[in-house]
Image 1 (cartoon, rainbow, N blue to C red):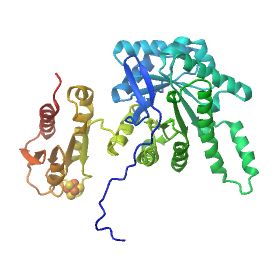
Image 2: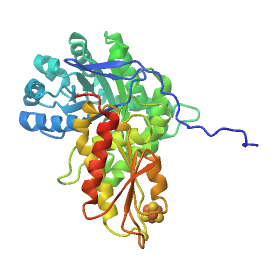
Image 3: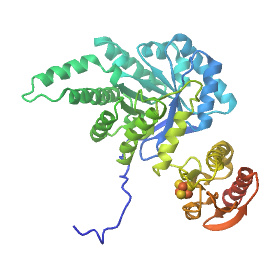
Image 4: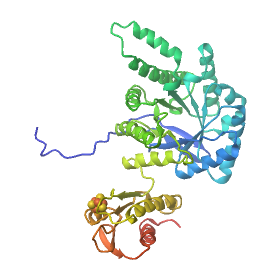
Length: 420
Ligand code: SF4
């Protein structure tokens, strides 16, 4: 085959068309699906009945960029706390919509605590955890009736760990009667997908609009998640929530989530994402937001904060200054974003290069909006800074970090400033 005349093109596929689901709190409207930018969401890990702690964590997640925050609603105390949390957030100026996560007793909590049902912007229903036999259908119908009454969207969230056992048993029996039975894993996939789509179709029969439904089928294996969502996306037009459940701790959790979600996003599948990380002791809950945003930004799907391009360093790197500068620049940019994003629209598309020596430093720095190339071993102690491809100045002396941040700030003010 002759490739000589073939252009090289980027490979991301068009977004799959899904129903658009609006999630509202006051004037804040978040659109999930219908080609809207992929929404970043997160979940609290506080005791929801603790109004102070939960409102504080929701505010922290919202400040970090969570566009929707889910909290567990598992007891009467938690249900009573929800409207108080909403009021607290509204009074502090945080209009991020709240989603309530219900299991087992959601039908009771949503009907007995109407203030909770009204204060939430979205309900998450797990069809595997709404009851057994005839009660299952009745409980599900009760929750959908509340969603219809208050015009709230729902996420029908099926989970590998709480799969509808009755449905699984039926599919296993049907499979056993096939002339060539499917592998057990395929029957499990089918059970997840059937549970989600069947429940959504039932909700529509009960009066909920198709544009009020988001679906998810969460599993903990990367290949399982990819297989399930490909099929789910092929078989239904509902907006899809992506997430690898029980992704794990540290780098394993991040890598597993990103590996699974990036394949699906690349194929145009997914309208909202959550990265389910187990925080390390003392680690901020907001890490999952940072990972979600960086995933979408590095894939070229959304921009949230200026990107720092930095080399890994090697034997040519002269000192710890390079590593320190790369990290402090990243931290500085992220810390400014709550202020900058309103004041300097477009700043989130800026790129900053921090490079360790002359080999790739000046070249990479010229590709970025702003670049700094530190001297490597044996190079003169001068630090050239580039702006928009041109050498702007040379820094010397002790406080390179502070001088560089001043240059970045001036660049931002002169290139993006349009609001007072
Ligand atoms: S730019 Fe220089 S310091 Fe950085 S990895 Fe390349 S050779 Fe090493």
